[in-house]
Image 1 (cartoon, rainbow, N blue to C red):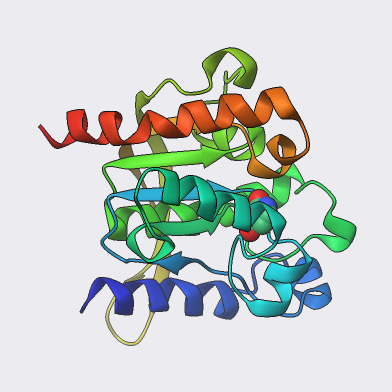
Image 2 (image 1 turned 180 degrees about the vertical axis):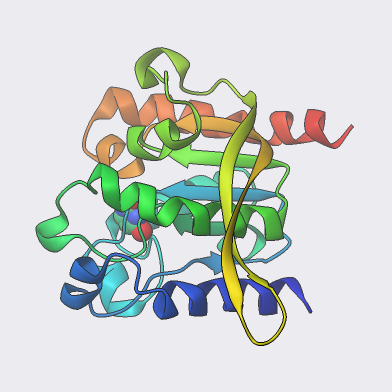
Length: 213
Ligand code: URA
């Protein structure tokens, strides 16, 4: 199976497993992710907003426009990276995603990363960064890449023969390099944060170059 087909399966699993039904009910559609399935960089935001909910694509509103501009500043197009969110349905009135919503979606996000196998995971905003770096202090840690090994639970159905199967839980480890950045929406209207985010963005090519060696 291709990486795209594997990603499509994860998307179908979210719908089949009825993840966050309260959010799903109020949203127009699932906003799964967009970009190259074999990208070197994955960007992870928090949750879709109104325009993302309408179009079914992440970061297509004002903060998406800013993200595309920053990508262009390091000579990258959206199609060359992969963009997704922790929570994949729009929370009502764009409220912050709840801890249990982030927890429910985390296994699917981890599966996306395991399929794509990016060299660098860029988290956008505190919510996204803290999924991987629980002690994150964004004002001091932004722009500094960190290698992590994160233990997580894998749930799968095991066939026991004679048509019966049981739910099997095992532990697995995700290793990744995380670059925590400010969220473009926060930086968009705050001049000093905007400059910090653009400066951090300019470090991405060097960080990636080092990781390629
Ligand atoms: N903000 C996010 O965190 N994600 C989006 O997709 C859009 C805005």
